[in-house]
Image 1 (cartoon, rainbow, N blue to C red):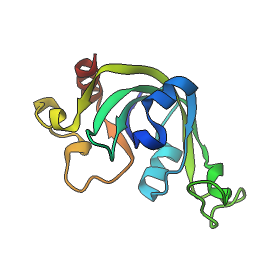
Image 2: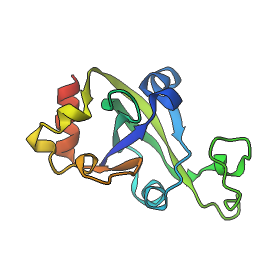
Image 3: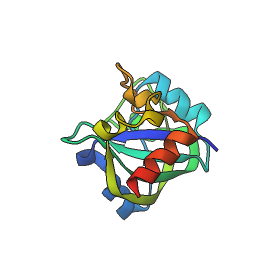
Length: 151
């Protein structure tokens, strides 16, 4: 099993949306490095820290689980979607997504500011300068520390 951190803007799709929907496909990723992880590395059963970004207080807010491995992101073929890409087609998909399921919402959000003070999280990609990816791997230790702080 692997561990991941997925970023989402709470106004677009937050942890409360996932809690209500129970499962959802993680679509709209338009970065090749992140696409490769969705297509090749993220597996059914992997655990996800759900992170709210681009908001007043960026924070880890809950846990999700991968319930379907990478498959073509069909929203790229829809010109009415929020993230269309005319270069991606059903025959030659460029973009991929996974499905995730809600596991839990943290009792207490774990803010980015708080994470910066935790020695055990010091090497986490989220805390490094220039980190722009919307998803990336984290260690089991990072996952456990964050979930413990959120409980």
